[in-house]
Length: 310
View 1: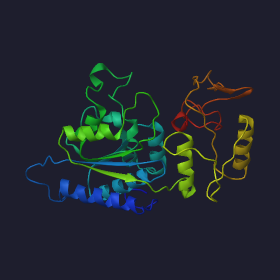
View 2: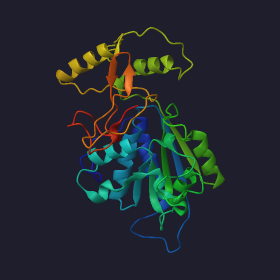
View 3: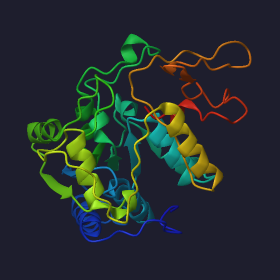
View 4: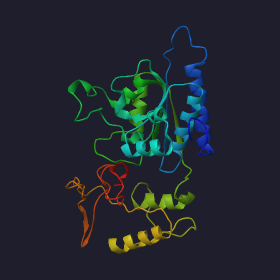
Protein backbone atom coordinates (compact mmCIF):
# COMPACT_ATOMS: atom_id res chain seq x y z
CA UNK A 1 0.00 0.00 0.00
CA UNK A 2 1.36 3.44 -0.89
CA UNK A 3 -0.46 6.72 -0.24
CA UNK A 4 -3.80 4.96 -0.56
CA UNK A 5 -2.85 3.24 -3.81
CA UNK A 6 -2.10 -0.41 -4.54
CA UNK A 7 -3.81 -1.66 -1.41
CA UNK A 8 -2.13 -4.74 0.05
CA UNK A 9 -4.31 -5.24 3.11
CA UNK A 10 -8.00 -6.08 2.94
CA UNK A 11 -9.75 -5.28 6.21
CA UNK A 12 -12.45 -7.60 7.46
CA UNK A 13 -15.22 -7.46 10.03
CA UNK A 14 -14.12 -5.67 13.18
CA UNK A 15 -11.00 -4.39 11.43
CA UNK A 16 -13.09 -2.51 8.88
CA UNK A 17 -15.38 -1.16 11.61
CA UNK A 18 -12.43 0.25 13.58
CA UNK A 19 -11.02 1.95 10.48
CA UNK A 20 -14.38 3.46 9.53
CA UNK A 21 -14.99 4.74 13.07
CA UNK A 22 -11.55 6.37 13.28
CA UNK A 23 -11.98 8.05 9.90
CA UNK A 24 -15.48 9.27 10.77
CA UNK A 25 -14.35 10.68 14.13
CA UNK A 26 -11.28 12.28 12.57
CA UNK A 27 -13.53 14.07 10.11
CA UNK A 28 -15.67 15.44 12.94
CA UNK A 29 -12.74 16.53 15.11
CA UNK A 30 -10.55 17.94 12.35
CA UNK A 31 -13.24 19.47 10.15
CA UNK A 32 -13.05 20.04 6.41
CA UNK A 33 -9.37 20.16 5.29
CA UNK A 34 -10.35 22.40 2.35
CA UNK A 35 -12.13 24.94 4.59
CA UNK A 36 -10.03 25.62 7.72
CA UNK A 37 -11.90 27.03 10.70
CA UNK A 38 -11.41 30.76 11.34
CA UNK A 39 -10.89 29.99 15.03
CA UNK A 40 -8.65 26.95 15.71
CA UNK A 41 -10.43 24.08 17.49
CA UNK A 42 -8.51 22.27 20.21
CA UNK A 43 -10.81 19.26 20.24
CA UNK A 44 -9.04 15.93 20.68
CA UNK A 45 -9.95 12.24 20.37
CA UNK A 46 -8.08 9.10 21.42
CA UNK A 47 -8.57 5.56 20.14
CA UNK A 48 -7.19 2.46 21.84
CA UNK A 49 -7.25 -0.75 19.79
CA UNK A 50 -6.09 -3.90 21.59
CA UNK A 51 -5.54 -7.36 20.17
CA UNK A 52 -3.00 -10.13 19.95
CA UNK A 53 -0.40 -10.69 17.27
CA UNK A 54 -1.97 -11.34 13.89
CA UNK A 55 -5.31 -9.66 14.58
CA UNK A 56 -4.65 -6.96 11.97
CA UNK A 57 -3.71 -3.94 14.07
CA UNK A 58 -0.98 -2.74 11.72
CA UNK A 59 -3.16 -3.39 8.67
CA UNK A 60 -5.79 -1.08 10.15
CA UNK A 61 -3.19 1.56 10.99
CA UNK A 62 -1.74 1.57 7.49
CA UNK A 63 -5.16 1.79 5.87
CA UNK A 64 -6.09 4.70 8.13
CA UNK A 65 -2.81 6.43 7.31
CA UNK A 66 -3.36 6.06 3.56
CA UNK A 67 -6.96 7.26 3.71
CA UNK A 68 -6.14 10.31 5.84
CA UNK A 69 -3.18 11.31 3.68
CA UNK A 70 -5.42 11.09 0.62
CA UNK A 71 -7.66 13.66 2.37
CA UNK A 72 -4.69 16.00 2.83
CA UNK A 73 -4.31 15.40 6.58
CA UNK A 74 -0.96 15.56 8.34
CA UNK A 75 -0.24 12.04 9.62
CA UNK A 76 2.68 10.28 11.29
CA UNK A 77 2.99 6.57 12.03
CA UNK A 78 5.09 5.94 15.14
CA UNK A 79 6.39 2.89 16.99
CA UNK A 80 9.00 2.07 19.61
CA UNK A 81 10.74 -0.56 17.48
CA UNK A 82 13.55 -0.06 14.99
CA UNK A 83 12.74 -3.45 13.44
CA UNK A 84 9.10 -2.46 12.96
CA UNK A 85 9.93 0.89 11.39
CA UNK A 86 12.55 -0.69 9.15
CA UNK A 87 10.03 -3.21 7.88
CA UNK A 88 7.44 -0.49 7.25
CA UNK A 89 9.90 1.71 5.39
CA UNK A 90 11.15 -1.20 3.30
CA UNK A 91 7.88 -2.87 2.42
CA UNK A 92 5.39 0.01 2.51
CA UNK A 93 7.35 3.19 1.86
CA UNK A 94 8.96 2.02 -1.36
CA UNK A 95 11.35 4.65 -2.77
CA UNK A 96 9.47 7.77 -1.72
CA UNK A 97 11.69 9.58 0.81
CA UNK A 98 8.89 11.81 2.15
CA UNK A 99 6.62 8.81 2.62
CA UNK A 100 9.32 6.80 4.41
CA UNK A 101 9.95 9.70 6.77
CA UNK A 102 6.29 9.68 7.82
CA UNK A 103 7.21 6.57 9.84
CA UNK A 104 8.91 7.61 13.06
CA UNK A 105 9.48 6.72 16.72
CA UNK A 106 7.68 7.42 19.98
CA UNK A 107 10.76 9.34 21.15
CA UNK A 108 10.45 11.82 18.24
CA UNK A 109 7.93 14.03 20.04
CA UNK A 110 9.83 15.41 23.04
CA UNK A 111 9.20 18.76 21.36
CA UNK A 112 5.64 18.72 19.99
CA UNK A 113 5.17 19.67 16.34
CA UNK A 114 3.85 23.14 15.68
CA UNK A 115 1.18 23.06 14.45
CA UNK A 116 0.07 19.77 15.92
CA UNK A 117 -0.36 16.81 13.62
CA UNK A 118 -3.87 15.99 12.58
CA UNK A 119 -3.38 12.30 13.37
CA UNK A 120 -0.68 10.27 15.09
CA UNK A 121 -0.89 6.47 14.79
CA UNK A 122 1.04 4.69 17.53
CA UNK A 123 1.66 1.02 16.75
CA UNK A 124 3.10 -1.49 19.21
CA UNK A 125 2.08 0.83 22.05
CA UNK A 126 3.08 -1.83 24.58
CA UNK A 127 6.60 -0.52 23.84
CA UNK A 128 5.94 2.93 25.28
CA UNK A 129 8.66 4.10 27.67
CA UNK A 130 8.22 6.04 30.87
CA UNK A 131 10.33 8.88 29.42
CA UNK A 132 11.87 9.65 26.03
CA UNK A 133 15.60 9.37 26.68
CA UNK A 134 18.71 8.52 24.73
CA UNK A 135 22.28 8.25 25.99
CA UNK A 136 23.46 10.23 22.95
CA UNK A 137 21.12 13.18 23.60
CA UNK A 138 22.13 16.35 25.43
CA UNK A 139 20.32 16.92 28.76
CA UNK A 140 18.01 19.51 27.21
CA UNK A 141 16.92 16.95 24.58
CA UNK A 142 15.74 14.36 27.10
CA UNK A 143 12.03 13.97 27.78
CA UNK A 144 10.69 15.48 31.00
CA UNK A 145 7.13 14.10 30.96
CA UNK A 146 5.60 10.65 30.40
CA UNK A 147 6.13 9.56 26.81
CA UNK A 148 2.41 8.89 26.40
CA UNK A 149 1.74 12.57 27.18
CA UNK A 150 4.23 13.65 24.52
CA UNK A 151 2.33 11.58 21.95
CA UNK A 152 -1.02 13.03 23.01
CA UNK A 153 0.43 16.55 22.83
CA UNK A 154 1.62 15.90 19.28
CA UNK A 155 -1.74 15.40 17.56
CA UNK A 156 -5.46 16.05 17.71
CA UNK A 157 -6.44 12.46 16.93
CA UNK A 158 -4.24 9.75 18.43
CA UNK A 159 -4.68 6.05 17.66
CA UNK A 160 -2.90 3.50 19.86
CA UNK A 161 -2.54 -0.15 18.83
CA UNK A 162 -1.60 -2.35 21.78
CA UNK A 163 -0.97 -6.05 22.40
CA UNK A 164 -1.52 -6.52 26.12
CA UNK A 165 0.30 -9.87 26.09
CA UNK A 166 3.59 -8.53 24.76
CA UNK A 167 6.53 -7.18 26.72
CA UNK A 168 10.03 -6.83 25.29
CA UNK A 169 12.19 -4.71 27.60
CA UNK A 170 11.93 -3.95 31.33
CA UNK A 171 11.68 -0.18 30.75
CA UNK A 172 8.62 -0.47 28.50
CA UNK A 173 5.46 0.53 30.35
CA UNK A 174 2.73 0.60 27.70
CA UNK A 175 -0.60 -0.71 29.00
CA UNK A 176 -4.25 0.00 28.31
CA UNK A 177 -4.56 1.58 31.77
CA UNK A 178 -1.62 3.93 31.11
CA UNK A 179 -3.24 5.25 27.94
CA UNK A 180 -6.72 5.48 29.45
CA UNK A 181 -5.40 7.45 32.44
CA UNK A 182 -3.41 9.81 30.22
CA UNK A 183 -6.48 10.56 28.10
CA UNK A 184 -8.60 11.07 31.22
CA UNK A 185 -6.10 13.57 32.68
CA UNK A 186 -6.59 15.87 29.71
CA UNK A 187 -10.33 15.25 29.36
CA UNK A 188 -9.95 13.67 25.93
CA UNK A 189 -12.68 11.17 25.01
CA UNK A 190 -11.27 7.66 24.49
CA UNK A 191 -12.89 4.96 22.38
CA UNK A 192 -11.66 1.40 22.91
CA UNK A 193 -11.86 -1.61 20.61
CA UNK A 194 -10.72 -5.19 21.07
CA UNK A 195 -9.74 -7.33 18.07
CA UNK A 196 -10.12 -11.07 18.53
CA UNK A 197 -10.15 -12.68 15.08
CA UNK A 198 -6.80 -14.21 14.14
CA UNK A 199 -5.33 -13.71 10.66
CA UNK A 200 -1.83 -15.07 11.25
CA UNK A 201 -0.78 -18.62 12.06
CA UNK A 202 -2.75 -19.95 9.12
CA UNK A 203 -5.90 -18.50 10.67
CA UNK A 204 -5.77 -21.17 13.37
CA UNK A 205 -7.54 -19.83 16.45
CA UNK A 206 -6.93 -23.19 18.13
CA UNK A 207 -3.18 -22.77 17.75
CA UNK A 208 -3.27 -19.27 19.21
CA UNK A 209 -5.30 -20.45 22.22
CA UNK A 210 -2.96 -23.43 22.70
CA UNK A 211 0.18 -21.26 22.65
CA UNK A 212 -1.33 -18.76 25.09
CA UNK A 213 -2.21 -21.60 27.46
CA UNK A 214 1.25 -23.19 27.20
CA UNK A 215 2.95 -19.86 27.90
CA UNK A 216 0.64 -19.06 30.80
CA UNK A 217 -0.90 -16.04 29.04
CA UNK A 218 -4.44 -17.21 29.62
CA UNK A 219 -6.40 -18.96 32.34
CA UNK A 220 -6.83 -22.08 30.18
CA UNK A 221 -5.05 -25.24 31.30
CA UNK A 222 -2.38 -26.39 28.78
CA UNK A 223 -3.50 -29.46 26.86
CA UNK A 224 -1.92 -31.78 24.32
CA UNK A 225 -1.93 -30.18 20.88
CA UNK A 226 -4.63 -31.57 18.59
CA UNK A 227 -3.83 -31.13 14.86
CA UNK A 228 -6.38 -28.88 13.14
CA UNK A 229 -5.14 -29.04 9.55
CA UNK A 230 -3.98 -25.42 9.69
CA UNK A 231 -0.82 -25.51 11.79
CA UNK A 232 1.87 -28.18 12.06
CA UNK A 233 3.84 -28.55 15.29
CA UNK A 234 6.97 -30.58 15.90
CA UNK A 235 9.04 -30.90 19.07
CA UNK A 236 12.80 -31.16 18.57
CA UNK A 237 14.92 -32.76 21.28
CA UNK A 238 18.06 -30.77 20.42
CA UNK A 239 18.89 -27.45 18.75
CA UNK A 240 20.80 -29.42 16.12
CA UNK A 241 17.62 -31.27 15.17
CA UNK A 242 15.62 -28.04 15.15
CA UNK A 243 18.14 -26.39 12.84
CA UNK A 244 18.06 -29.39 10.51
CA UNK A 245 14.26 -29.17 10.25
CA UNK A 246 14.38 -25.43 9.56
CA UNK A 247 17.12 -25.71 6.94
CA UNK A 248 15.25 -28.54 5.21
CA UNK A 249 12.15 -26.35 4.95
CA UNK A 250 14.22 -23.40 3.71
CA UNK A 251 15.85 -25.49 0.99
CA UNK A 252 12.36 -26.57 -0.10
CA UNK A 253 11.50 -22.90 -0.70
CA UNK A 254 9.86 -21.90 2.58
CA UNK A 255 10.72 -18.70 4.42
CA UNK A 256 12.38 -19.72 7.68
CA UNK A 257 13.97 -18.27 10.77
CA UNK A 258 15.39 -19.65 13.99
CA UNK A 259 14.91 -17.46 17.05
CA UNK A 260 16.14 -17.55 20.62
CA UNK A 261 15.00 -16.13 23.93
CA UNK A 262 16.06 -12.71 25.13
CA UNK A 263 18.38 -14.19 27.73
CA UNK A 264 21.66 -14.49 25.83
CA UNK A 265 24.56 -12.00 25.61
CA UNK A 266 25.03 -10.12 22.37
CA UNK A 267 28.65 -9.38 21.63
CA UNK A 268 29.48 -6.56 19.25
CA UNK A 269 30.99 -7.70 15.91
CA UNK A 270 34.70 -8.39 16.19
CA UNK A 271 37.43 -7.14 13.86
CA UNK A 272 37.20 -5.17 10.61
CA UNK A 273 35.23 -8.00 8.99
CA UNK A 274 32.49 -7.74 11.62
CA UNK A 275 32.87 -11.33 12.81
CA UNK A 276 29.91 -12.48 14.88
CA UNK A 277 30.54 -14.26 18.16
CA UNK A 278 28.56 -17.45 18.86
CA UNK A 279 26.77 -16.02 21.91
CA UNK A 280 23.87 -18.49 21.86
CA UNK A 281 25.26 -21.72 23.30
CA UNK A 282 23.38 -24.90 24.14
CA UNK A 283 25.75 -27.77 24.82
CA UNK A 284 27.98 -28.21 21.78
CA UNK A 285 25.64 -26.19 19.58
CA UNK A 286 26.76 -22.57 19.11
CA UNK A 287 25.28 -19.85 16.91
CA UNK A 288 25.59 -16.02 16.77
CA UNK A 289 22.90 -13.41 17.12
CA UNK A 290 21.97 -11.28 14.15
CA UNK A 291 24.46 -8.80 12.80
CA UNK A 292 24.93 -5.48 14.57
CA UNK A 293 23.98 -3.34 11.58
CA UNK A 294 23.27 -3.32 7.85
CA UNK A 295 27.02 -2.94 7.27
CA UNK A 296 28.08 -6.21 8.91
CA UNK A 297 25.85 -9.05 7.82
CA UNK A 298 28.51 -11.70 7.17
CA UNK A 299 28.01 -11.83 3.40
CA UNK A 300 24.27 -11.86 3.81
CA UNK A 301 24.21 -14.94 6.02
CA UNK A 302 22.93 -13.04 9.05
CA UNK A 303 20.15 -10.41 8.98
CA UNK A 304 20.87 -6.98 10.51
CA UNK A 305 19.99 -6.10 14.07
CA UNK A 306 16.87 -4.26 12.96
CA UNK A 307 15.42 -7.70 12.14
CA UNK A 308 16.74 -9.38 15.23
CA UNK A 309 14.18 -11.65 16.88
CA UNK A 310 14.70 -12.37 20.55
